[in-house]
Structures are given as C-alpha cells and as structure tokens.
Amino acid sequence: MATSLAHQPEQACRESELVNQLLIDPSRANFLRLADYCETNERAEDAREFSLGIVPPDFLQRYKLERQPVTAVNQAAGHQRRLEYREELYRVNRPLNDDAQRNSVFDIQSIRTCLSAMDEFHDASLVTNGTENLLIDNSGQYIGQHTTRNYCLLDQHPQRTDTPQQHLSGLTVALLPRNAHNFYHWMVDVITQLELLESSGVALTDVDQFVISCTGNEFQLTSLNMIGIPLERVIRNDKSFSSYRCDRLLLPLQFNRMGRSLSIRSLAFLRRKMLPLQCPVASIGKRIAIHRNARGIANISQVNEQLADFGFDIVTLENLSLPEQISVFHNADVVFAPHGAGLANLTYCRPGTRVLEVYGLQIQPCFWLMSELLGLKYHNYNFSENTVLAESDNNRNLEKRLQSEISVDLSILQKLLSDTVPGAR
Image (cartoon, rainbow, N blue to C red; front, side, top):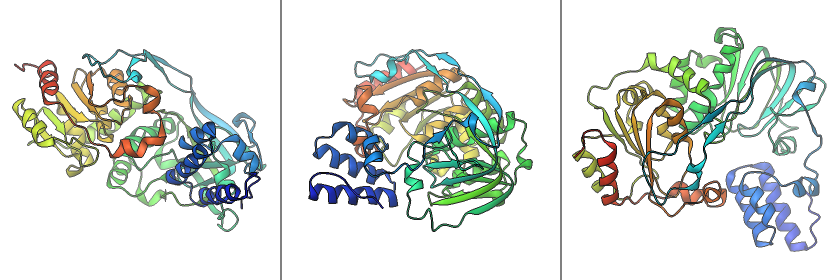
C-alpha cells in the first residue's frame, strides 16, 4: 500500500491514509477528500486534478502508483483495428432566444467528434471496476486508449492479487464507459457503441458474452432487450473489481465529452433501432413538460399552473416504460424540461420540435448540441448566476449543483412560453 514521502509527519500520515482510501474505493467522494486536503495545504493544481477525478502526476511518482507505462494501441500484440471513423466537424447555432444570464458554454460555434474505432485483441486481459479500465495484451503490455488515465487505481488495488481471473471463451464485447448508471450516459455512451460493432461487421448473435457497466436499472435491461442483446449473455459489472482473460475481445473506442463530441451517426443509430419499438401513450398530448423529483423546480406548483395554461401535459418519465418515453417524445411538438438525463429522449423527436430547457446551477450543453444535430428548435434559460463555463465544468461543487433546485421567475417563464409555443397569445 501507499507510503508517503511528505515532509510533515502529521500531513504525511493523513495524506497516506487518504491515498489508501482512494485505492480501496476510487469513488468521487474520496477524490474530493483528496482535493480538499490539497487545497488546505495550498496545492491548488493537485486539488484541481483530484476534483476532476484525476490522480496528479506528483502523487503517481510519490506513491509509485504506476508500475508500467502504457503502449500505443497500434503496437499491441494480437491487435487488429476492425473499424475507424475519423473526426467530423459540426457547426452549431446559439439557442434561439435571448438570455442575459446565459452560460458561456453556449458561445461555442462548432463541435468536433473524436476518432472512433472498434479494436480486436486476441488472448488479452481486461481489469475493470466499471469506472477505470486496464487492458493488457498477450505480451503483458498495458495498452493505451482503452486503458483509462487512472489505471493505477486498478493496478494497485488490494484485490488485484486476490481476485481470480475469469476466463471468457469465444468472442467478448466490453462496453465500459463511465457513469453508465445515468440514463443519458447509458443511452449516448453505452448503447451507441453498438453502432461501431454493427458497422465492423459483427452481428449480436456472433458475440458469446458482453461485459457491460450495468447496475441493473430497468432502463438498462429494457434497452438491452430492445436492441437485441439477451440478458443471459450479459456479464454485469456493477462497479465491482473484476478481472477477465478473453480469447477474443472487441473494445469500442468512442468519446462524448458531455455532448461536445457527439455524432449524427450515433444519434441516427439510436433512432433506427429504438423508434420502431415505441409504445404510444394516448393520454399524453403534443406539448409535454417533464417533471423531475430530484434537482427539479422549487416553485413547481406555480410553474405547472402556468404550463397548463399553455396546454402542456405534465410527464414523470419514471412512470413510463422506455418504449412509452420514446413515443411521448417522438409525438411531441413542444418539450419543456429542467436540465436532466431524461432529455436524452430528445433523440427521438421529429425535426422542428421546439425545446425549452431551463437551468439552475447544473449547466451542461449536451441537450442543446443534441438538438442542433437533430434539427430541433432549441431555447433555454438560465435561472441561476452560473454564467461561466469553467464553473460549469468544476467538479468541486458538483454535488451542490446536482442537488440544487431551480427557482423559476414566472414572469420570465410567461414570456418564454409565449415566444416558444406555437399559437400562444
């Protein structure tokens, strides 16, 4: 385990204790504890790195956490690149309405997709905890791109030597992006990786098992069934430490960056696979307002009254099946919602659908960018004082932002609805 070389004995003891806790449990809470420790000790750059979920280089050196450097994927033993998509550039327009408080993240004028690929490895080892991944080829090299930045947390994990390696025969596909417990990340980061599999010429029936970051949420199991993956062939990694030896391993390479490298190709794949399986909900009309139980609207009763005056139906997505959610969004002419993962269903809206997204402290551009790629008419309003991009991307206050409600100014909402809803007076 870690041994500190810090100068002050008390600090050394505390620092070593925090690093050991991170090795045992690389949770966001333990990253933030180290960020607080570094900030208290006036190590601002280390604090920033830990707050972003990154182990800083000086900690890697001090605690000798990286036993082995990573090797470029094209130098891996037993490797074949089956498919590769180069970068694409998309121009985007600002939201359609004016907002003096708009966060500067909406000033960007274009997004660029990252290189995407499907790589095959023969007789390779995969170590994962559902957040960090370590890929080892058949010569023992640690392979970059598919090995995450904090692979030291797996390499030095107390269970690394105690956990028996599970042999996976035949063909294995691993889908292991971060934050797969979240509906947005599940649909956009996990399910869309299957487009790379399909385009590389591999049918779902050719795969013997799928190793997937899956906690067993209903939307996860339903979407896997809809896409055609039998659950009995799914090895669920629920953030537990696991080690596999794979005869043949397919690993997709795809990045999202909170929508800032989203591709039209990925969204088209979701629409093609999911829209034919929608289930209509007759009681919900063409103007929908999404209700959130967590990080919702503080003055929800007054807002709902105003929305009802404009003919909106209030929709709680948790009360609908995934096929019903798809249908409700596909049928909608206008969508009103506080920022939240359920807006991933904008994927299924028809071009020209009007979207009005309202923000509190938690601001990300993913649904604006999704709307731009899909040809939706996107409006938003910031009901907070968070106007700086850097603050939106700062993980130090993420928990506060995730728990904060939105206080909607009713006079502003009245104008927004009057300007957004077709035929409103």
